[in-house]
Image (cartoon, rainbow, N blue to C red; front, side, top):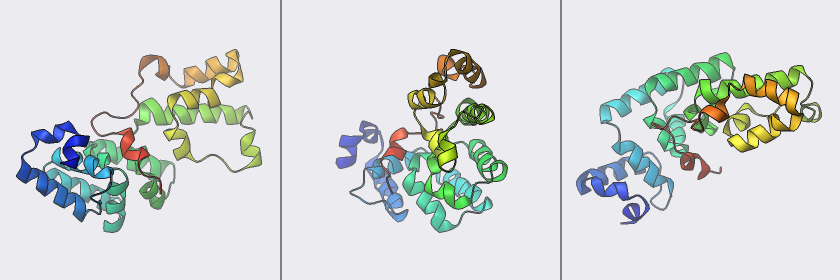
Length: 204
């Protein structure tokens, strides 16, 4: 089977249950020829129907429509493995604190996977310092960089663009603001609910 060749863990799922997970994934809009189908099946197999339904209700409670929820899961199936409190914190931070529109999260749901305290907030602190020092010259020529672009940048790319290129003294201050994240822990996304491949395969 194509799924088994892609993900050996599928071998541990009884065939009858596997067919059920594939059927549910197809109902959610996944295509049999899509590489994302594997991630959808793995995510669905990790949750009971009760837990899955509870998470859907959490999205609804935060204003997402049925179509939007389906689109989110299609773009980032690993998101449904996230703990409910993690999702709740993400909704509160992005939509209430940052004022980001719900529609923006539908298009870029992967940002909800990243750890707010270890990655998202520290990166925004770095940008705040740079803006206060008037060092983000590119923002004078064009509108501010999308927060999602900042969050989704690789660690190496973020450090090169927003930390190390500003010289030792300023870079040290920026690293302190970043809480020594690079030195302490590389794993910015919660391993219980994330897969970078979930996000990288979606391009639209």
